[in-house]
Length: 225
Image (cartoon, rainbow, N blue to C red; front, side, top):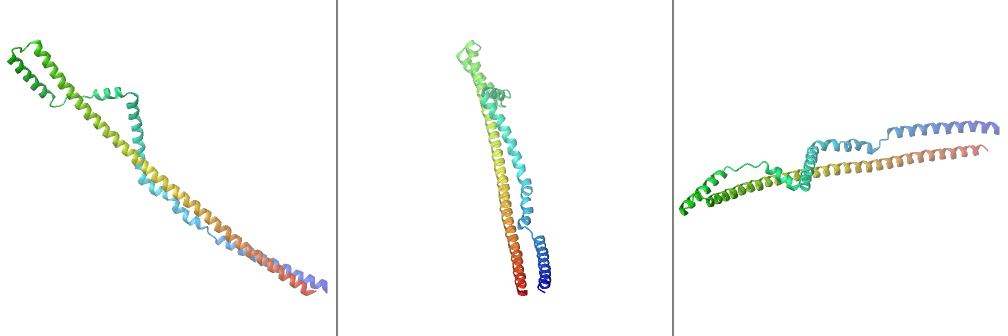
């Protein structure tokens, strides 16, 4: 009878434990299947940040990169051969519209002065006229050169401005990407921690339930004695 009781009781106990284990396993599967990592919901939006802001910042970054390349070439020419640079600019010199008028006026004045002094057509007059014309030519050239170099300086400043604009845009882009990556890392960490905590709680409940079932089964077995 004892054997029958234990046998019968053991069979019932084993069946109950197996049923509880199967139910617990099914419950865990359902819970885990229905679990969604919170971070996965936010990731698609964070992943869009770079593509969303790129069309606005890329043109400025590209312009800045082009300006930097131009500046490097120009500064290289200025540092390596400043005299050659000035000469290359001077080769484009053209007389100002008022230059010939100034020469004619100066020559007429010199002729009148020479005629009044009685040395018109003399070597002295010719030297004086040549000196006046040469001074006017130098003045015209350096006025043109200063204006050209001033315009060149404005061009360099403009390129520098584009370079700064490109740098600012690149900085904005890098900051946005860094912030998005930091947010992704934080969400991934928090999501995984939450997932681990959820799993731990579920397993705790299962183990507790199994322990309770084992205790009840033990009590049942003892009651047969």
